[in-house]
Image (cartoon, rainbow, N blue to C red):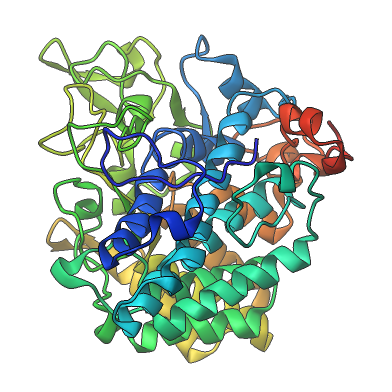
Length: 490
């Protein structure tokens, strides 16, 4: 059902539940606690700790199932045979709405508190940007969904709510991001990256405009972040490999991240993270599960000279203390390395309950968003578009402190089509396995080609355009017929 509860920041406590904002919001500490609760809900097994992430990965053409005996709900998602009772979507939907409910409670309740006005506006803006992120996922995954923009104290008032148009949902997301740009700070104390800043709100807005194909506004906001990178504390890390060390959190490349604290977890799945074992090697010393692996054609599609190939893929690891090639693993598939190699000193022995801060956005993506948007808005690349893309390629040439000559900078003179292909390829290589690919394929309009063309990394001849959206959860349709019709194809 559409959840409207409020989460507490204490991992061992239950959510506050259905509570009128005026009954809970009395002090500045209550305001802070309510907003912090939205972050703890994002940092849960049901969203960024497992279900949302692997759903986005498996929908893309670069991630496949390794252990074929894994849960059927994952196999359905991966093979585009999802039905409306699928356990993944029946977790993602209500938990994103739970985040929205908590954000709405904060937005409605905080204004009545006697506190510093600047701090009040900041906290409300934080909640609005979290709400925007939640709808950003819902609208891209499901299309038309109910938009709830205020706290719901009586669930019966939304029991028969209807779907909201995609245009209206995006308009509300944009308004929330604009509030974030107006009221959020440039940075937080202690370099915290799990709370949205002005730069994070502007980055999310740029991504929304890209999804809407409003390239001029996407370029405006992406470049706004780049031009203020010094104020926001953003930069590329010198070594691509250091991005995936969970003990290296809150670094300059993180624009906005979901923060997991290693070794602890709440009773409702909060702070529970399984990405490392899901992608780690089964029956190896790392004690992974081999659930999600690169699609068969992906490894060979990376140039051997590209340092990001070495960092992103796992082709050998210790088994009983002996370095062993993937051909001899239980599931003899090349694995992805980004999450399982360095899950943090506080993680469990299998890498679960990690210290990872999972990127919602990182600065390299901002540069690539700007390059893409400029090329599309201007009918071809400008000098700035080349500069942004080449900065990402330049960083890739730093192989652990030793500079290489690959990949070379792009040279001026490319056509719009040639630059478009280059920036799309750069996103594919730079952001591999970071749950970006599915939204990219949808935005570019080439998802069907990606799964059915002769050069597909992961062929699925059954793929049709209807599968660009997931089915609406059947239990939601059963409770509320006003959510009908079901998405086409299901």
